[in-house]
Amino acid sequence: MANFGWAYINCSGANDGAAAGPAYSLQFVTESGPHTTGSTLLNYYTASTYSHAPSTLVLSGNLVVTGSISASIYHIEDIAIIDATGSTYFGDSNDDTHLRTGSLLITTAAPDASTEGTLVLSASATTQRVYVRGFGARYHRVTAGSYTIKNFDYIIGCSGSGDQTLYLPSPSTVGAGVVMVVKDEYRTRTATSVYVSASNPAGTFTIEDQPYYQLNGTMAAINLYSDGTNWFVY
Image: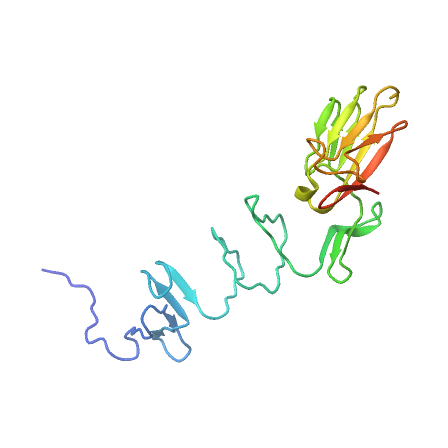
């Protein structure tokens, strides 16, 4: 003898599980009844629809998440506040540009008596000045007879015993306002000199209207800045 399971026939009434709402809408249960419904404000598109790519969930409204969100890419059009902890990375290539408007503050996590506070760096949009607690610049030691200074060099120490010639980068390349420091570090220089050439080859640019500058005296130094056209001593 055959056995039959339970079956509900004539499925009509309050508990028939009917679904409502527009096409592509995700279903949810309202407070008014057991039936599910949908909204044009929450849609899931399995194929390319309108301007949306396949497999796209579209919410027109606010989303509150109490847990974590994991995604391969975040595309955000408008941000009012970012509050984050832990390590944060921006950019993945040298041509990336991170633009911000307003002031910038960098602080330590907590006040430190040895550093007298928390402020490490600040850039004020009001005063248009940058304040740094301690400053460290790129240093390059030169022992050879000649060296072409790089655009990113700042302090150049000359420690060779013989004549040394430094070639400054093009002021039109580094731009106006760039500063560099050249220091003779050789303690017993007598018959040799340190020469700072305004360009390589000489004659294209000048230092104080001269093709080169010679450091004289014991362990002399020179501070230079560019106006975008030539070099000057300050």
